[in-house]
Image (cartoon, rainbow, N blue to C red; front, side, top):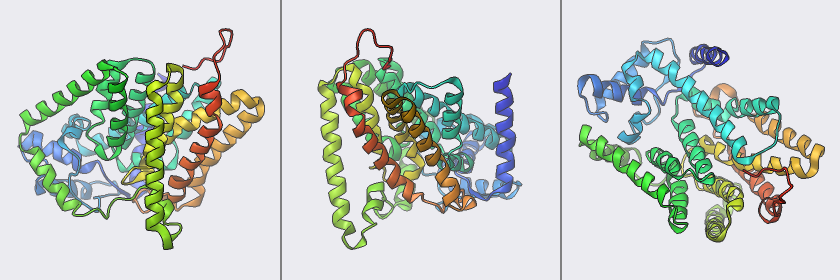
Length: 400
Protein backbone atom coordinates (compact mmCIF):
# COMPACT_ATOMS: atom_id res chain seq x y z
CA UNK A 1 0.00 0.00 0.00
CA UNK A 2 2.82 2.40 0.89
CA UNK A 3 4.50 1.72 -2.47
CA UNK A 4 1.24 2.50 -4.29
CA UNK A 5 0.89 5.78 -2.39
CA UNK A 6 4.46 6.72 -3.31
CA UNK A 7 3.87 5.95 -7.01
CA UNK A 8 0.67 7.99 -7.08
CA UNK A 9 2.50 10.81 -5.33
CA UNK A 10 5.25 10.69 -7.94
CA UNK A 11 2.65 10.83 -10.71
CA UNK A 12 0.98 13.95 -9.27
CA UNK A 13 4.35 15.57 -8.57
CA UNK A 14 5.47 14.87 -12.15
CA UNK A 15 2.32 16.43 -13.59
CA UNK A 16 2.73 19.49 -11.38
CA UNK A 17 6.42 19.91 -12.33
CA UNK A 18 5.71 19.63 -16.08
CA UNK A 19 3.14 22.43 -15.77
CA UNK A 20 5.45 24.67 -13.71
CA UNK A 21 8.84 24.41 -15.45
CA UNK A 22 9.79 24.78 -19.09
CA UNK A 23 11.76 21.73 -20.17
CA UNK A 24 13.19 19.98 -23.21
CA UNK A 25 10.94 16.99 -23.86
CA UNK A 26 12.98 13.99 -25.03
CA UNK A 27 10.05 11.56 -24.71
CA UNK A 28 7.51 13.11 -27.04
CA UNK A 29 9.31 12.15 -30.28
CA UNK A 30 9.75 8.44 -29.38
CA UNK A 31 6.12 8.44 -28.21
CA UNK A 32 4.94 10.02 -31.47
CA UNK A 33 7.16 7.68 -33.52
CA UNK A 34 5.69 4.61 -31.85
CA UNK A 35 2.14 5.93 -32.11
CA UNK A 36 2.41 6.86 -35.79
CA UNK A 37 3.94 3.50 -36.62
CA UNK A 38 1.49 1.40 -34.61
CA UNK A 39 -1.71 3.22 -35.58
CA UNK A 40 -0.95 4.49 -39.08
CA UNK A 41 2.01 2.48 -40.35
CA UNK A 42 4.16 5.63 -40.69
CA UNK A 43 7.94 5.25 -40.71
CA UNK A 44 9.15 6.31 -37.21
CA UNK A 45 11.85 8.45 -38.85
CA UNK A 46 9.42 10.30 -41.15
CA UNK A 47 8.86 14.04 -40.84
CA UNK A 48 5.18 13.45 -39.98
CA UNK A 49 6.33 12.14 -36.60
CA UNK A 50 7.84 15.52 -35.70
CA UNK A 51 4.62 17.29 -36.69
CA UNK A 52 2.65 14.93 -34.44
CA UNK A 53 5.06 15.56 -31.58
CA UNK A 54 4.87 19.34 -32.02
CA UNK A 55 1.07 19.43 -32.23
CA UNK A 56 0.82 17.17 -29.16
CA UNK A 57 2.96 19.49 -27.04
CA UNK A 58 1.03 22.55 -28.24
CA UNK A 59 -2.29 21.02 -27.22
CA UNK A 60 -1.32 20.38 -23.58
CA UNK A 61 -0.73 22.45 -20.45
CA UNK A 62 2.73 20.91 -20.13
CA UNK A 63 5.58 23.34 -20.82
CA UNK A 64 7.63 20.85 -22.83
CA UNK A 65 9.61 21.96 -25.88
CA UNK A 66 10.97 19.89 -28.74
CA UNK A 67 14.74 19.23 -28.60
CA UNK A 68 16.93 21.50 -30.71
CA UNK A 69 17.56 18.63 -33.12
CA UNK A 70 13.94 17.60 -33.61
CA UNK A 71 14.63 14.12 -34.98
CA UNK A 72 14.28 10.56 -33.70
CA UNK A 73 18.00 9.93 -33.18
CA UNK A 74 17.72 6.69 -31.23
CA UNK A 75 17.70 3.35 -33.06
CA UNK A 76 14.41 1.52 -33.48
CA UNK A 77 15.68 -0.98 -30.88
CA UNK A 78 15.18 1.62 -28.13
CA UNK A 79 11.47 1.98 -28.85
CA UNK A 80 11.02 -1.31 -26.99
CA UNK A 81 11.06 0.71 -23.77
CA UNK A 82 8.36 3.23 -24.72
CA UNK A 83 6.33 1.45 -27.40
CA UNK A 84 3.52 0.24 -25.07
CA UNK A 85 3.07 3.82 -23.83
CA UNK A 86 2.56 5.07 -27.39
CA UNK A 87 -0.95 3.59 -27.33
CA UNK A 88 -1.88 5.84 -24.39
CA UNK A 89 -2.86 9.51 -24.58
CA UNK A 90 0.30 11.57 -24.28
CA UNK A 91 -0.54 13.14 -20.92
CA UNK A 92 -1.05 9.71 -19.36
CA UNK A 93 1.98 8.18 -21.08
CA UNK A 94 4.24 11.06 -20.02
CA UNK A 95 3.11 10.77 -16.40
CA UNK A 96 3.74 7.02 -16.38
CA UNK A 97 7.15 7.64 -17.94
CA UNK A 98 8.06 10.09 -15.17
CA UNK A 99 7.21 7.46 -12.57
CA UNK A 100 9.23 4.78 -14.40
CA UNK A 101 12.29 7.03 -14.65
CA UNK A 102 12.09 8.00 -10.98
CA UNK A 103 11.79 4.35 -9.96
CA UNK A 104 14.80 3.60 -12.18
CA UNK A 105 16.87 6.21 -10.32
CA UNK A 106 15.78 4.77 -6.97
CA UNK A 107 16.56 1.26 -8.23
CA UNK A 108 20.01 2.43 -9.26
CA UNK A 109 20.54 3.83 -5.77
CA UNK A 110 19.53 0.49 -4.27
CA UNK A 111 21.98 -1.37 -6.55
CA UNK A 112 24.77 1.05 -5.63
CA UNK A 113 24.31 0.14 -1.97
CA UNK A 114 24.19 -3.57 -2.82
CA UNK A 115 27.34 -3.48 -4.94
CA UNK A 116 29.33 -1.42 -2.45
CA UNK A 117 28.03 -3.33 0.61
CA UNK A 118 28.11 -0.05 2.54
CA UNK A 119 26.86 -1.02 6.00
CA UNK A 120 24.03 1.37 6.83
CA UNK A 121 20.83 1.31 8.84
CA UNK A 122 17.45 1.08 7.11
CA UNK A 123 16.88 4.81 7.60
CA UNK A 124 20.32 5.59 6.15
CA UNK A 125 19.61 3.35 3.14
CA UNK A 126 16.33 5.17 2.47
CA UNK A 127 18.06 8.55 2.79
CA UNK A 128 20.89 7.49 0.45
CA UNK A 129 18.44 6.19 -2.17
CA UNK A 130 16.37 9.38 -1.86
CA UNK A 131 19.48 11.55 -2.36
CA UNK A 132 20.34 9.61 -5.52
CA UNK A 133 16.80 9.86 -6.91
CA UNK A 134 16.41 13.55 -5.98
CA UNK A 135 19.86 14.66 -7.21
CA UNK A 136 19.36 17.57 -9.59
CA UNK A 137 21.22 16.05 -12.60
CA UNK A 138 19.01 12.96 -12.19
CA UNK A 139 15.79 14.92 -11.77
CA UNK A 140 16.66 16.78 -14.96
CA UNK A 141 16.58 13.47 -16.83
CA UNK A 142 13.21 12.60 -15.30
CA UNK A 143 11.55 15.88 -16.24
CA UNK A 144 13.08 15.82 -19.72
CA UNK A 145 11.91 12.24 -20.23
CA UNK A 146 15.36 10.91 -21.10
CA UNK A 147 15.88 7.15 -21.44
CA UNK A 148 19.24 7.45 -19.66
CA UNK A 149 18.07 6.47 -16.11
CA UNK A 150 16.78 3.15 -17.47
CA UNK A 151 20.04 2.50 -19.33
CA UNK A 152 22.07 3.28 -16.20
CA UNK A 153 19.87 0.89 -14.21
CA UNK A 154 20.44 -1.85 -16.81
CA UNK A 155 24.22 -1.33 -16.73
CA UNK A 156 24.41 -1.37 -12.92
CA UNK A 157 22.14 -4.41 -12.71
CA UNK A 158 24.33 -6.21 -15.28
CA UNK A 159 27.53 -5.44 -13.36
CA UNK A 160 25.91 -6.58 -10.10
CA UNK A 161 24.80 -9.80 -11.82
CA UNK A 162 28.33 -10.44 -13.14
CA UNK A 163 29.83 -9.96 -9.66
CA UNK A 164 27.30 -12.45 -8.28
CA UNK A 165 27.80 -14.92 -11.17
CA UNK A 166 24.28 -14.54 -12.55
CA UNK A 167 25.74 -14.64 -16.03
CA UNK A 168 22.69 -15.26 -18.19
CA UNK A 169 20.82 -12.37 -16.60
CA UNK A 170 23.86 -10.13 -17.01
CA UNK A 171 24.11 -10.92 -20.71
CA UNK A 172 20.47 -10.09 -21.41
CA UNK A 173 20.71 -6.83 -19.46
CA UNK A 174 23.78 -5.76 -21.43
CA UNK A 175 21.96 -6.57 -24.68
CA UNK A 176 19.08 -4.28 -23.67
CA UNK A 177 21.54 -1.44 -23.09
CA UNK A 178 23.05 -1.80 -26.57
CA UNK A 179 20.62 0.62 -28.24
CA UNK A 180 22.00 3.61 -26.29
CA UNK A 181 25.42 3.11 -27.80
CA UNK A 182 26.68 6.62 -26.88
CA UNK A 183 26.39 5.63 -23.22
CA UNK A 184 26.99 1.91 -23.28
CA UNK A 185 29.64 1.36 -25.97
CA UNK A 186 32.76 1.46 -23.78
CA UNK A 187 31.01 -0.35 -20.90
CA UNK A 188 29.88 -3.12 -23.25
CA UNK A 189 33.37 -3.38 -24.71
CA UNK A 190 34.90 -3.71 -21.24
CA UNK A 191 32.58 -6.43 -19.98
CA UNK A 192 32.10 -8.40 -23.21
CA UNK A 193 35.86 -8.82 -23.65
CA UNK A 194 36.28 -9.47 -19.92
CA UNK A 195 33.70 -12.27 -20.20
CA UNK A 196 35.56 -13.75 -23.15
CA UNK A 197 38.96 -13.83 -21.44
CA UNK A 198 37.41 -15.19 -18.22
CA UNK A 199 35.50 -17.81 -20.21
CA UNK A 200 32.17 -16.68 -18.80
CA UNK A 201 30.43 -18.12 -21.84
CA UNK A 202 26.94 -17.76 -20.39
CA UNK A 203 27.31 -13.96 -20.45
CA UNK A 204 28.38 -13.97 -24.09
CA UNK A 205 25.70 -16.44 -25.18
CA UNK A 206 22.96 -14.43 -23.45
CA UNK A 207 24.32 -11.12 -24.73
CA UNK A 208 24.61 -12.09 -28.39
CA UNK A 209 21.36 -14.08 -28.26
CA UNK A 210 19.56 -11.03 -26.84
CA UNK A 211 21.09 -8.79 -29.51
CA UNK A 212 20.17 -11.22 -32.27
CA UNK A 213 16.59 -11.43 -31.01
CA UNK A 214 16.21 -7.63 -30.87
CA UNK A 215 17.70 -7.13 -34.33
CA UNK A 216 15.78 -9.94 -36.01
CA UNK A 217 12.43 -8.87 -34.55
CA UNK A 218 13.05 -5.20 -35.36
CA UNK A 219 13.98 -6.03 -38.96
CA UNK A 220 10.95 -8.27 -39.36
CA UNK A 221 8.52 -5.57 -38.22
CA UNK A 222 10.33 -2.65 -39.94
CA UNK A 223 12.95 -3.69 -42.46
CA UNK A 224 13.84 -0.13 -43.51
CA UNK A 225 14.71 1.28 -40.09
CA UNK A 226 18.54 0.93 -40.20
CA UNK A 227 18.77 3.02 -43.37
CA UNK A 228 16.31 5.63 -42.10
CA UNK A 229 18.09 5.88 -38.76
CA UNK A 230 21.51 6.20 -40.41
CA UNK A 231 20.22 9.04 -42.60
CA UNK A 232 18.97 10.89 -39.52
CA UNK A 233 22.31 10.40 -37.74
CA UNK A 234 24.24 11.78 -40.71
CA UNK A 235 22.00 14.87 -40.79
CA UNK A 236 22.19 15.41 -37.04
CA UNK A 237 25.92 14.73 -36.65
CA UNK A 238 27.61 15.84 -39.92
CA UNK A 239 31.02 16.17 -38.21
CA UNK A 240 32.69 15.44 -34.88
CA UNK A 241 32.24 18.84 -33.26
CA UNK A 242 29.51 17.43 -30.97
CA UNK A 243 31.99 15.21 -29.11
CA UNK A 244 32.75 16.61 -25.67
CA UNK A 245 34.13 14.30 -23.01
CA UNK A 246 34.71 15.30 -19.36
CA UNK A 247 38.44 15.15 -20.06
CA UNK A 248 38.01 17.72 -22.83
CA UNK A 249 36.19 19.97 -20.36
CA UNK A 250 39.08 19.54 -17.91
CA UNK A 251 41.63 20.40 -20.61
CA UNK A 252 39.68 23.54 -21.52
CA UNK A 253 40.53 25.00 -18.10
CA UNK A 254 43.87 25.81 -19.75
CA UNK A 255 42.76 27.03 -23.20
CA UNK A 256 46.28 27.83 -24.35
CA UNK A 257 47.31 24.17 -24.27
CA UNK A 258 43.86 22.57 -24.28
CA UNK A 259 44.42 20.47 -27.42
CA UNK A 260 47.70 18.99 -26.22
CA UNK A 261 46.43 18.56 -22.68
CA UNK A 262 43.29 16.83 -23.95
CA UNK A 263 45.35 14.35 -25.97
CA UNK A 264 47.61 13.70 -22.98
CA UNK A 265 44.67 13.19 -20.60
CA UNK A 266 42.82 10.86 -22.96
CA UNK A 267 45.97 8.91 -23.75
CA UNK A 268 47.04 8.63 -20.12
CA UNK A 269 43.61 7.60 -18.84
CA UNK A 270 43.18 5.13 -21.72
CA UNK A 271 46.48 3.46 -20.77
CA UNK A 272 45.41 3.36 -17.11
CA UNK A 273 42.00 1.93 -18.05
CA UNK A 274 43.62 -0.79 -20.18
CA UNK A 275 46.14 -1.57 -17.42
CA UNK A 276 43.33 -1.85 -14.89
CA UNK A 277 41.29 -4.02 -17.27
CA UNK A 278 44.21 -6.39 -17.89
CA UNK A 279 44.80 -6.63 -14.13
CA UNK A 280 41.32 -8.12 -13.77
CA UNK A 281 42.31 -11.09 -15.93
CA UNK A 282 44.32 -12.60 -13.11
CA UNK A 283 42.20 -11.29 -10.26
CA UNK A 284 40.13 -13.33 -7.85
CA UNK A 285 36.41 -12.91 -7.27
CA UNK A 286 36.91 -10.85 -4.12
CA UNK A 287 38.75 -8.22 -6.20
CA UNK A 288 36.05 -7.82 -8.87
CA UNK A 289 33.98 -5.18 -7.09
CA UNK A 290 36.76 -2.60 -6.75
CA UNK A 291 38.00 -3.19 -10.30
CA UNK A 292 34.57 -3.10 -11.92
CA UNK A 293 33.42 0.04 -10.13
CA UNK A 294 36.70 1.78 -10.92
CA UNK A 295 36.29 0.79 -14.59
CA UNK A 296 32.77 2.27 -14.60
CA UNK A 297 34.15 5.56 -13.27
CA UNK A 298 36.93 5.63 -15.87
CA UNK A 299 34.42 4.79 -18.60
CA UNK A 300 32.43 7.85 -17.57
CA UNK A 301 35.44 10.07 -18.32
CA UNK A 302 35.25 8.93 -21.95
CA UNK A 303 31.54 9.70 -22.41
CA UNK A 304 31.36 11.55 -25.71
CA UNK A 305 28.11 13.50 -25.26
CA UNK A 306 26.03 14.95 -22.40
CA UNK A 307 28.41 13.56 -19.78
CA UNK A 308 26.46 15.03 -16.86
CA UNK A 309 23.54 12.76 -17.79
CA UNK A 310 25.52 9.66 -16.83
CA UNK A 311 27.31 10.97 -13.73
CA UNK A 312 25.51 8.29 -11.74
CA UNK A 313 27.93 5.73 -13.20
CA UNK A 314 30.51 7.09 -10.74
CA UNK A 315 28.24 6.66 -7.70
CA UNK A 316 28.76 2.91 -7.06
CA UNK A 317 32.49 3.57 -6.66
CA UNK A 318 31.68 6.58 -4.46
CA UNK A 319 29.57 4.38 -2.18
CA UNK A 320 32.39 1.80 -2.06
CA UNK A 321 34.75 4.54 -0.87
CA UNK A 322 32.24 5.54 1.80
CA UNK A 323 31.94 1.90 2.88
CA UNK A 324 35.65 1.52 3.57
CA UNK A 325 35.99 4.93 5.17
CA UNK A 326 33.13 3.99 7.51
CA UNK A 327 34.60 0.54 8.29
CA UNK A 328 38.17 1.69 8.87
CA UNK A 329 37.65 5.08 10.51
CA UNK A 330 34.42 4.16 12.31
CA UNK A 331 32.51 7.22 13.54
CA UNK A 332 34.80 9.75 11.84
CA UNK A 333 34.56 7.84 8.57
CA UNK A 334 30.76 7.81 8.73
CA UNK A 335 30.64 11.55 9.40
CA UNK A 336 33.01 12.32 6.51
CA UNK A 337 31.10 10.00 4.18
CA UNK A 338 27.67 11.45 4.91
CA UNK A 339 28.92 15.04 4.81
CA UNK A 340 30.51 14.32 1.42
CA UNK A 341 27.28 12.79 0.10
CA UNK A 342 25.18 15.71 1.35
CA UNK A 343 27.58 18.23 -0.24
CA UNK A 344 27.52 16.35 -3.57
CA UNK A 345 23.71 16.29 -3.41
CA UNK A 346 23.32 19.93 -2.38
CA UNK A 347 25.87 21.66 -4.60
CA UNK A 348 23.83 21.54 -7.83
CA UNK A 349 20.74 22.89 -6.08
CA UNK A 350 22.56 25.96 -4.75
CA UNK A 351 25.07 26.74 -7.51
CA UNK A 352 22.98 26.79 -10.70
CA UNK A 353 19.77 28.37 -11.93
CA UNK A 354 17.44 25.41 -11.38
CA UNK A 355 14.80 26.27 -14.05
CA UNK A 356 17.57 26.48 -16.69
CA UNK A 357 18.61 22.92 -15.87
CA UNK A 358 15.45 21.43 -17.36
CA UNK A 359 15.90 23.17 -20.72
CA UNK A 360 19.38 21.68 -21.09
CA UNK A 361 21.20 24.98 -20.64
CA UNK A 362 23.25 23.83 -17.62
CA UNK A 363 26.14 21.44 -18.34
CA UNK A 364 27.27 20.84 -14.72
CA UNK A 365 30.86 21.19 -15.90
CA UNK A 366 32.24 21.45 -12.36
CA UNK A 367 30.53 18.22 -11.34
CA UNK A 368 31.54 16.29 -14.45
CA UNK A 369 35.18 17.18 -13.74
CA UNK A 370 35.28 17.24 -9.96
CA UNK A 371 33.15 14.25 -8.97
CA UNK A 372 34.99 11.54 -10.97
CA UNK A 373 38.37 12.92 -9.86
CA UNK A 374 37.19 12.83 -6.23
CA UNK A 375 35.96 9.25 -6.72
CA UNK A 376 39.22 8.12 -8.37
CA UNK A 377 41.25 9.58 -5.49
CA UNK A 378 38.90 7.96 -2.99
CA UNK A 379 39.11 4.59 -4.76
CA UNK A 380 42.90 4.83 -4.74
CA UNK A 381 42.81 5.50 -0.99
CA UNK A 382 40.80 2.32 -0.29
CA UNK A 383 42.51 0.07 -2.86
CA UNK A 384 44.55 -1.84 -0.30
CA UNK A 385 41.57 -2.48 1.95
CA UNK A 386 39.33 -3.53 -0.92
CA UNK A 387 41.77 -5.74 -2.83
CA UNK A 388 44.81 -6.70 -0.77
CA UNK A 389 43.43 -7.17 2.74
CA UNK A 390 42.47 -10.83 3.19
CA UNK A 391 39.04 -11.81 4.48
CA UNK A 392 39.43 -13.62 7.81
CA UNK A 393 37.06 -16.54 8.43
CA UNK A 394 35.85 -14.90 11.62
CA UNK A 395 35.31 -11.52 10.01
CA UNK A 396 31.80 -10.16 9.97
CA UNK A 397 32.60 -7.78 7.14
CA UNK A 398 30.66 -9.26 4.22
CA UNK A 399 32.18 -8.20 0.91
CA UNK A 400 29.39 -9.34 -1.38
